Image 1 (cartoon, rainbow, N blue to C red):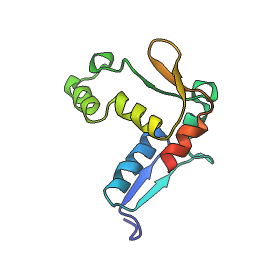
Image 2 (image 1 turned 180 degrees about the vertical axis):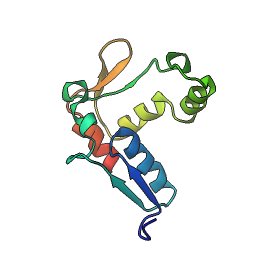
Image 3 (image 1 turned 90 degrees about the horizontal axis):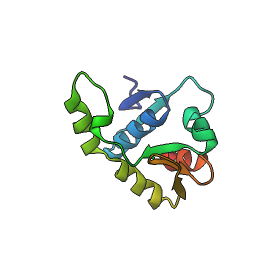
Image 4 (image 1 turned 90 degrees about the vertical axis):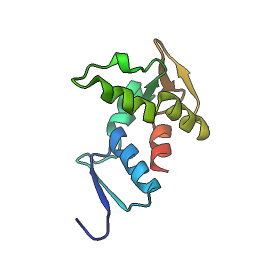
Length: 117
């Protein structure tokens, strides 16, 4: 591993950014690598540019997996409500569109800026 970094994350999308955040919280020096010119490009274009950032009806039963306990464990560690609280902490306005889908009122760039900060 490169001596200047403790963690190298391949992929600067939503999952990669969240991994970088968690590693940073643990005092790790992070290098985030992506093939795209712009960081978080899929976040930027999702939801027509308004970013469908979570669903309030997220539940382990909504996922198919060979190990159904994985979803239970993952979704109890970090819930949709946890992310909603992070969005609210950053004063990002949002609305429910349909079926529990939450979108930014303005631009997906607010979510990207929040994750980068």
